[in-house]
Length: 306
Image (cartoon, rainbow, N blue to C red; front, side):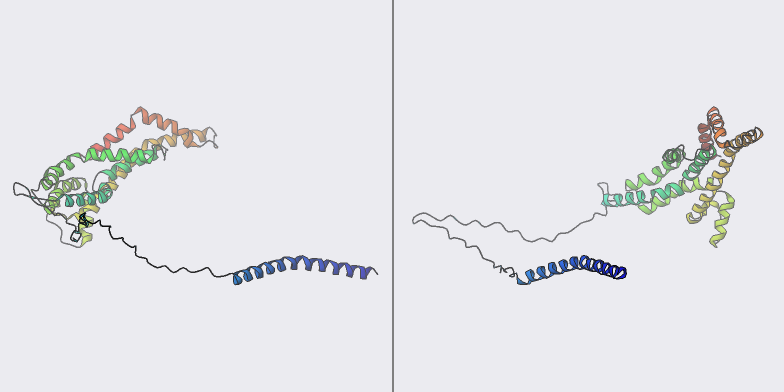
């Protein structure tokens, strides 16, 4: 008897489970069938045929004995093709060849596009920004001053150092070209002369000989005959070397402070106290007492006039 009662209970539970599972499926199936039958039995939407009906223009009413006013038709203009004219320059009132405004705008946009590369590669910006960054790291403050301050200071110091060279380029190349006295190629050749002088003064002989030998061409007769494709990478390497030499000199006093502080803490048994935390106030005090930023900036400016 107990076994039969258990079997009957199992059958009851199986029937209930079957009903629970099949009821939702049957409901979904009925809903789907009703929806499909409704869609099949619905009448198609009436199609409307579009017909173009020309509006009837009523003839004007005329009264006997009254003259009919003349019909005024809208004026018709002859079709003209759209054209774009570009002014490539010409001669002014004195007969001199002068570049057009469109050419000047294109040249200015080109200069603005390559200005960041020219600023980094052909000026004193590389040396200045590296030295200022190394000074910040030597103090133990990798994020103070912020990058915007370091780059801004480097930019204005570069303009200060390059002011004589830029004024020469403006006098001998830019202004004559804008006045129409010379063309663009002549202005480019004239602008190279002051810039080449500045770069040759800051380029070491070893880096210059390195790229002259690597080019595989005949060595130039003098330094002034070195092509720009060889002078520019030699100048950049020289700037990197000079910047790291100045940075090494700046690191020495701060390194001595770190060594003294760390040895003092070890002798006192303070192993858990970070030496960097203790040496930072002393480095800041030393840097402020000697007027460090002015000293670094003056050394940088002097390094370009050796």
